[in-house]
Length: 377
Image 1 (cartoon, rainbow, N blue to C red):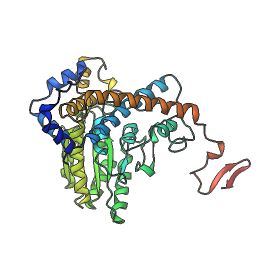
Image 2: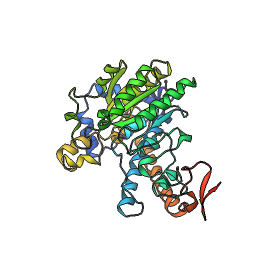
Image 3: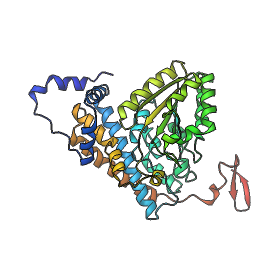
Image 4: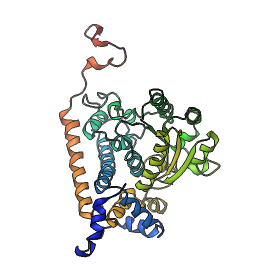
């Protein structure tokens, strides 16, 4: 889309002082140095295709994901929330890039690492953290927890602890959209490990046969549960599997939020036009989780991968395109920190635990646990 604000800025460039250059972290400096020169102008042009407000909101949601994950790790480590939260840090560009092009009434299905998807599609931090803490104010009244976040009212059909278990759910939702002749679409997130799951193949086959409005987004973070992804796929990639089902398959750089937005945006338009599903492979890198099996997180290999941090790279792009200044980006980061602090206060200090009467709610329709057993609501 056109960007009138950016155009007017370019016209008056000679009359304004030269903007301050983005302050880069050492890792970000390495990242920019490694980016091909041909890639930089392309990414800046894409930045000009979104409004300044859109760019700022995308950066805000990326910071929300990163800071939320850091806070959740801290709370779990200190025993203030229970369980073993599955973190998403490093993959922010995939969730935000894909969800930034969704409509509010579109749907997503998520994985056991669902915090990022939930936030990217407009989830509320306070009720989300309350859910992780098992409180009554949570999105599922404290019953879902970290790996089963869901909020159908905001289009989040739910995360799942079963690898690949959300893929058939996305196909079912897309089928409902088509049968009811709605213009909604579904984006299904899953990891590279799920692409070797039978549910993946069955779901893609059905979605292809029925030309369903669903976009399958594989977050290839290069390390599945028990082996590197490069050892699990003979072809060396995942997107080419789309050919087997007669659907579109594309790949994109999952560390660049605008590349993900472009790839998923094109796929969504195909879906809305009745041209069926698309398999999008976003090659990314997650900072925590199962990959500790393969190399030290402080190793040279890990540092090289982290040098392409998606938030640092997006700040560079926004600053170079005169869309979001370094000062404004810093303000956004500070505002997000305040949001996270308020969410902790709400979830852990102001939200009570569920009453015992809630134990069977949603299990038996119309019944709850009373003093003498099941009673009618």
